[in-house]
Amino acid sequence: MTSQQPDMATASRFFDDHQRATIEAAMARIIPTDDTPGATEAGTIDFLDHYLSGIGYIYAKPDGSGFEQLSGKRADAWRQRVDAVRERYVSGVRDLDERARQVHDADFVDLAPEQQDEILRDVEQPSRTQEADLERARTTLYGAPVEPALQQTSTEVDLGFVPLLALHTRQGFYADPIYGGNRNRVGWDVIGFPGPASLAEVHSGRYSTLDYFADDREHPITKEEAS
Figure (tube, rainbow, N blue to C red):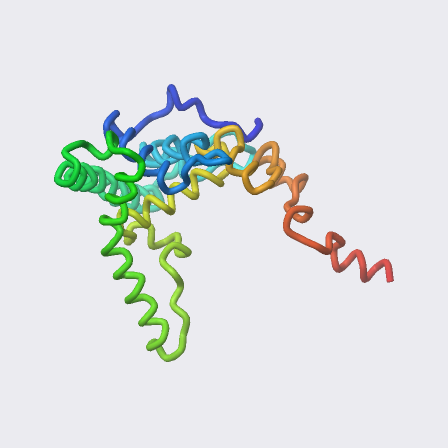
């Protein structure tokens, strides 16, 4: 099975039509379409809607044939996490619309791109305060580094709405297409990454990123044996 999108027409969805259109519009401001494809072309909304639809799409099977079915405490932990993220998005959409109506007398999705940017910046202000606090913590915590929140996958549920949106937009843009985003591999194409034909190629060892990331493509052991 190749790394292709699930059939989003038949896949489960979490967002209603208005929520989906609102989040899709906001994602398009995170990675806009210019001379290269953006979040819209990559279908990042499908990635997120798929993820929030339940716990059946968390871990793709190594052979690329589908997704692991979680059970027990592992399933319970993921349900709690997904529920928390769902709540963040529902309240986030509501907040975007309330702010948009106050300033422009229209829902967020109906605003011009520049007006949407204005609303997103307004929502983002508390997150910037959190970033400033984090920077101060770096300089006072006995010299020990503090890991940025967006690099901590375990803190997804602790992120504010805009940082969470940015995180999921990037994930949907660059993740393997089996997760619903990166439609037609456009995210990979933008950065010149060929990507595997399937997850099975990766887990079987038939595919390697060595040619993409490494300048010295010869394995150290091979060079040592040759000498």
